[in-house]
Image (cartoon, rainbow, N blue to C red; front, top):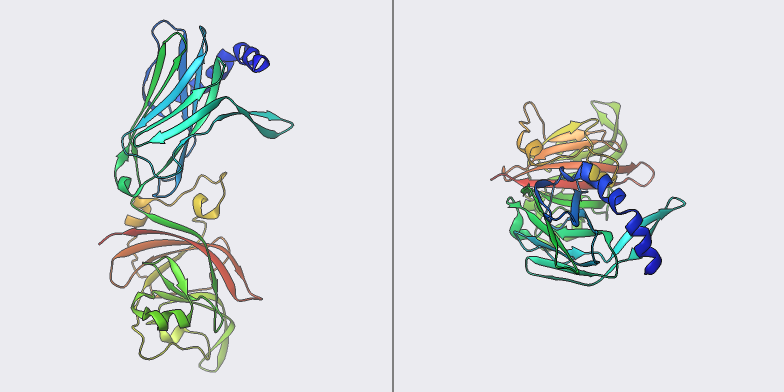
Length: 338
């Protein structure tokens, strides 16, 4: 580690200088060592809504002018779910490739505390991941980072409180508008079922809409373009020609509002897309003049909907639709409002 230590000594103030500009994005206070021999800065890299089960990523930078770094710690106000903790690497870029450099070991997390023991270095940046637990849903969470060197000097960095979403999210749900395909969608379960699964599990009361596909639909003897569609189980007149659902099923009228150019970086799986649907967006939907079906849904389109029982408002992002196979891949964000 001698070469790495020399490199980090030469770049100590560069590493921290780059982060200090951004550090205030994540902080309420920055309580560094008064002697000036210890410094630390922080970037909260995750900018999307904080949803239960998802990871929040931080980059914690530390450096000392005396001795070597001994440990890094973070204490959180609500214990994280499995997967919470420090990563034992710093990262460098060579020829546009990110390369890990191991600078820590004994990375542990127990209850609210995560720690990492640093290896023979005077400056490092560690990634810390917090997996949002169910206990944090709808609450605020904060973090206190600290580092200490071999001369017992200490620096701390406390964050602001971050609001955790009340939403649930599920990505990449495959649907197929075929006889045996998973086309019957439950917002409560965030899942598409086959007809057999609905009937076997007596789930018809949970089905909010059916995914349908047809090139054309006949109305009063004339054919019209139909394509991909979401149809409430109660909106039977809007099903494709020849399609019906069993008469003994419960039939829900789920109101829908199709949107253009409303994307979501989380459901789109695009880290470069900083447009996100959050709790406020779902709560703000009024569904004025909305109907219980939507036709001609397209790739990268979206639909806001409200379940018939008024329990959930949801946003569905259309990752893709394919005419040839009558299939779609979608993602959903769902908020319980009642």
